[in-house]
Length: 268
Length: 255
Image 1 (cartoon, rainbow over the protein chains, first blue to last red):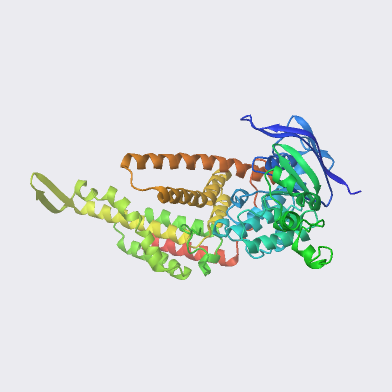
Image 2: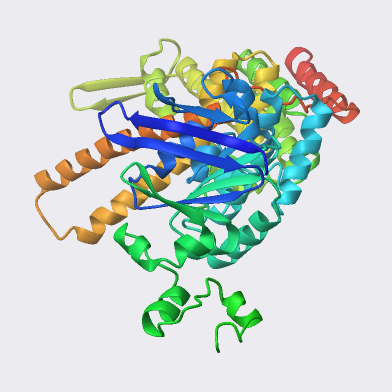
């Protein structure tokens, strides 16, 4: 059994204005898993992510990350849990790319040489080497999203949190990102509306609804269950709809590749 | 959207661009200091100062048209203040004019002061343009910080520089959305819309500030922004500064 990296018990959270965002969440996430949080706007996906690196803290319930209670080990946890925000303009706050990517490692107390090495490595990972001196406001949104990812990767996190990684990204950049996430071998937790991306990158899907976990299972279990998805305001991938609702098949493929690889199983 | 209004030509490559920002800051500020402290009647000195800064601008490969066009921006402001001096200063009269009951006299002393103010401000602007258009803004900030400008000020300017364009874009999008739905209406209504846009912009800025702070905290921010010190003074830098300051001093003292 893989190591448990996140353990949430009975977490409840209400924003200062009284809106209840989380209503009793209990959840375990294991090392190396790629987990998708799906659900409508306001279901509590982003709020849950913000609890995992201690930005938000609640009195009700406990959050344990990498064996540490979040409220007591905040610095340690923030250096090991990297969060990529939805709007790269929020994440890139320094005037030059290098300073932004180096921000995390410098705060972690690495030496000058180590910081430079980490920045180089992170920019290479996201395929943006050589733009250290550029200013974020001269970049396209796709490039900014990649730099935002690099600012977190340079800290070599053990857990990567992504808030809407594919929103507003063009199709080419989206393909790049999916390929990249598949090759990245760490625990990933992402909040998203992009169901097709979930089927391509995640092992587990968690459906959130009104601050609660409505379903929690493998991507195959959750995403092929169109009743479950639709009752929570979501939609199944088009392939699932075709095989299940139109062709009324037993075996339902999730990805186009499944069909191409096993045409006999799906009777094509 | 692409913006480059501050450091438009900072990406060019020339001997001036490659200089350490601290060297440039010290050199160009001493230039201003010496220009300002030159006696108003030393016309030759002003010509030589001009030739010096002109040489630097030539060496920087920044288009002259751009520099001179930009440098004229300051002139109206200076004129607004200085235009009355020739009429008010007492001294040898260069000419007097009568407009109905208004009697105006222009003095030589006044004219010299006018020339003095105009040429000094113009030379100062030229030198600041030479600094700003050959140095990338982040490097300029680093240079100022290394020279002892308080870190909190550098941080404020740095955030301003980073987000002024983001806000500009946001404002433009809101203006666009307004124009797309705006058909006529009276002036009062238009002013009200602008008021709403400004209010909206304020709230969005505030919220963005919160989000940026969260993003900073997520990466270990604890009240102090630390950056790597990657500025190194090279031989070329020292040569330039020695050369520049020597010529300046020669112009200032000897002539």
